[in-house]
Amino acid sequence: MSSAEDVRQVVGLAVTTMRQGTDPEAWQAKAGSLDWTCWETAEHVANVLFSYALRFGPAKPSAAGRVPFRLRGDRDDGPPTIFSADPEAGPENLLTILEGCGGLLASVRRTADPTAVAFHGYGASDPEGFAAMGVVETLVHTHDVAQGLGLEWSPPRGPCEKVLGRLFPHVNADGDAWEVCCGRRDAPPSRIVRGSPNGAGTADHARVASSLSKRRRSASF
Image (tube, rainbow, N blue to C red; front, side):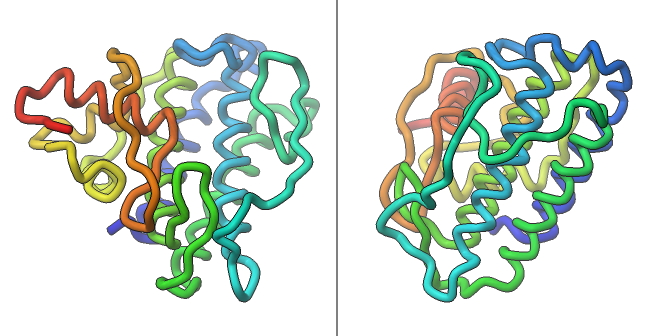
């Protein structure tokens, strides 16, 4: 079960890793295999964490439809965002926002009604499910940013195993969960967990699961 502490830990470690990328120009490099820059990718993670937290702000969260944010992007090929960090303030400002959004999701995970469910495009989920999705988004995209900045990213095994168990119960992690969640996406997207508070995922989550299934014979769908 992904906890508030897991969100705090993973986001904190992600920020510590990215903070080593001190050259502002390096943040305009492509993030791993993505078409987004390192800056855009980190900004995307902050937006995701914020949007997941906001779903549980109302007294009665809605499972019927998305929060009607006005999405925008700085360029056609970039990620759509709810908000943008001030580029003039440099990467440190961006990472402060990322850490703050992680703190919001951690707080929601700790305080929200555990039986509440809120909308997600792949199936309504509870606070624990959204915490797990926030963790795996951070794990995978920090790998992308680390590749673009030439950094090492070695996330802890425990939170990785938890998110695989929650989001991909059909996958046998069996020893390599930490490698998978740090971004080993060498296989095409496969089956996505859909439709209930017991499992919700995104395309990135599916890539994580499919890469594990490719590398481990014991994995099954």
